[in-house]
Image (cartoon, rainbow, N blue to C red; front, top):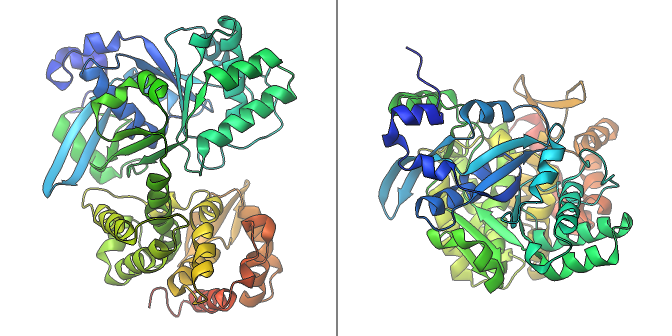
Length: 496
């Protein structure tokens, strides 16, 4: 017998799934969210839903999807309700619970529903904007703000804010709190700069620019929760049998959660959902949270993902169960990355955080696909790890051997063997895998033109336009990467 689809109609039949759902579904829209990804649903949307259940925030989310494909149909079928399975270890005890999330009111496609999205700017209660458009989403591009929609996320946001400015005649009360969650340093500050540049370039007027600067808060933020991509078939089947219903929007996450947001009293007042969970931290400065997470958790993910994947492993969990890869992960994190964080961090605090991350990586319930971590591989390597590498060489002339091995594996992962319909693919022991990175064409050219691993490594490391620095000038690093690449290419060794 086919399990019924999760929907308000199902909850009517089985009200134990979600008490008070009628009241919660009737709450007003207060947030516009750019992105439907699992991270947003597993962290910000989780906090909003929890606050609504505690009668604290009492608001719902309008989600904007950048394309007309995927996602929106599933949201429509389930009327934006989805299950969130939270599994792991907390305070030495196993946690395995499922939350029904009804925080999303509507999911709109930017390409098909732009007029409806702009109409949301007229809602006086909609005071918050959230985004996660990956690391490459927050950048300035030449855009047309009158298009339906503008191409870039900052263009869309600028157009939305200009619509709101006009709707409320630039009143102070109509200003918004904007919280990007993209994993880049100073994400709110950078987004603010781009929006102001778009406003100036499109001559939207001094009054609008003044309103942006005085009455809108662009908050730097940091999100930290492991929320893998689409759960594997085994997990989906297990949870479907356990719950008794089908959910095409099911997400799974670890127990740990942190959303650190930079702001003062006004931001705290608007983001009242923060009161519902200690995982939301609103402070004037979040640099410490950011550096620990960015350099140790995300940096380790990036350095280890290619190496572990090319070793024949598929998930972080498998990598932690394999003695060789587990040693690599722990070593590169605690021995090379932690001491070189480019921020004034107490070494004991860095080691403590690193050991917590290793425990999270060992979570037996989470199957975090390594191939998903390699999405936008080059941008992640640059933002997460290169500052740490440069700081290492400020402190020592010793070559970070594990870092060099992880970097060599990155180069090998980026070697394409096939190009079909604009998609590059690499080869892992006869199995093709997608290279989902904006720099894929760049590396295809480098691999094609290089006559040897030595030439390839030197060409890539010396490219200051790519890395913002000449990495080939770092003492011994070029040679270490080259030697590792030779060994990996010959498949003489992957880990040892």
